[in-house]
Length: 140
Ligand code: FES
Image (cartoon, rainbow, N blue to C red; front, side, top):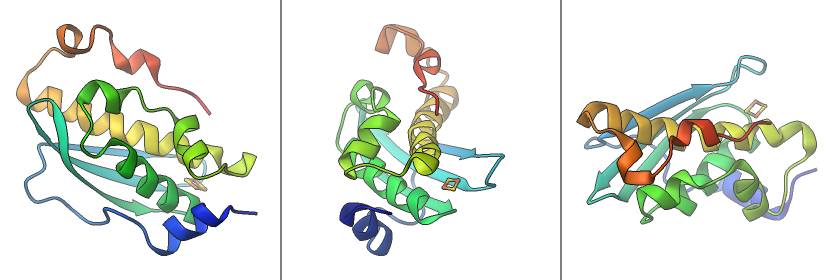
C-alpha cells in the first residue's frame, strides 16, 4: 500500500518536535479523519532557518509532515510557499488515493505557519511574494 519512502519517513521522521524559538506556528486539521498537524517555523532573513512538526494522525500524515519539513528547510519563504501537496506526495514516491488528503494537510500546515509569522510581525505578504498565497492552496 505504501512506498518504501513513506514507510521510511513514518518510522524515522525528520524534524519531529517543538521549536522553542519558533516565530511562526501553524495548526491545521482534517475534520473527516480528525488528524491534526502543527508546524513550527523559525524564519530569519526571509529563509526557513529551522522547522519542526508535531502530528497527531495517521502514518501518511507523519510521513508527509516529515517530507514537507525536509523540502522547505533552508528555503526562502517564496520557495516554501510554492510547495504543493503533489510535490510532497511525489517526493514520497506517491501516496494511495485515499491518503492524498494527508499531503494536503502538510502543505496547509507549512502555509499556516508562514501566515502566522506574517501576522505576528504585522507584515503584509503581498509586496514580498507578489500574490496572496492563501488563494493558491491546492485542494484534495
Ligand atoms: Fe487524515 Fe491521514 S488519514 S491525515
